[in-house]
Image (cartoon, rainbow, N blue to C red):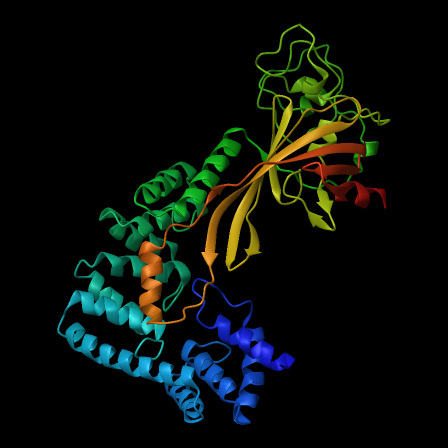
Amino acid sequence: MGTNMLRNLFCAAMLFHTGAVAAGSDIWASLFSETLQQARNGDSEAQYNVGAMYQNGRGVAANRNKAIEWYTRAADQGNSKAMSRLELMEANRSSFNSEMQHAENGNAESQYNIGNMFTKGNGTGIDLKQAVSWYEKAASQGHIKAAYKLGLAHYEGAGVRKSGKQALKWFSIAADDGYAPAHYYLGKLHAEGNGVRRNYGTALEWFTRAVDGGFDQARGEMIDVTERIQMQAAGSKPAKPRAKKIAKAKPKPAAAVASKQPAPAVAKPEPAVAVASTEPTSAVPRPKLAAAITSKKTTAAATSEADVTADTGDASGISIMENLMLGNWSRNEQPVAWLPSSVTNCRTEQNRIICFSDDQLRESGNKTVKFKTKAIISHFSAAGTFTVTYRNLVISAVSKQPVSTGDVAAFDEVQEEKGYAIRTGWGKEHTLECLMSDSHAVNCTKNKVQALALVNKQQVAGSR
């Protein structure tokens, strides 16, 4: 089987994925052009694929009549898939005509169904503006799912201009009737500050209601917002790269280290710190960052070395903890999600650093997974060692399982209303034992097996 045919088969497998977004219109356009050429040369499988592309608007504008034309060419050559598709399209066309009669007579459920049919090109051509029009007719009669679909249309800009305010309006109507998916999207609007002032507390309330209503996908968002609230309460800021080389940093006045209490008059100069402490400074001034970030339970008694940040031995006297916090750590030219970097928000808490990453995406089997990483960095020693424990928080896992039989729009409806059982929440914990060899290099061993080498991109840039 040639490379081109493999690519066509891949294209066909992707045509009916649910929840998946094309990697780029240029890729689909290229695949369409290549497949069309093979179809014109008489390849029945390519003819079927071209029909599917026209039906779903992949790489070319959706055109139901063109889809039927190419399906017919393939069916005339005995292609069984094309025959089945033509039968299904004819059955859907009959259903569309029947529903349209009821919709035009004012039946709200039929008006909603017609909206779905225009959205999916089920029994008719895809027409998102028409879909919105019919959803509006149904929603005006109190159809809750139609109100929800209008919220989605305005949220995504499908058939109408994007509008957070309009999305908020329609989602609120559906939410008032207890529709869990609407609760979920109200949570997203408040978390994003889309159409309403950002409020993580209100977002958490809506996500919680969505989970209580059976929309399990909201569980990951709920945990995410909880972490954001904690980071916000701690006054954390993203670890941002600095132009200066940290190894040459000169001591700054103690006032540069944020604290809830003023520094004692006899305090020694300390390096500037980018992240404010969440605890008051100790009554006895110390020259290290860790000393300024003390536990509420700190006493005059000696503290275990494993619980205190110690000097790395750098000429500057900067602590491991501070070097980590002021760094922009990466591996293989990519920022890491479990140390301070351009993709994490980190805060100091007693003698630990806690980091929470931005959204990350990963392909896993037939799913696209959106997740975040929470890391706790602790157990600093004078030898330059420290420990990182991290867990991934799965926020959503979108299935890309292709539809093999039945009505595409009906399948999507089932997924939307009953397919909430997505495994979200915290994954298993991983441990890394790390050693900071100098202020711009860290070596770690993950789960006692995998060796990882990390570089402080800020330090490297500053030393050039």
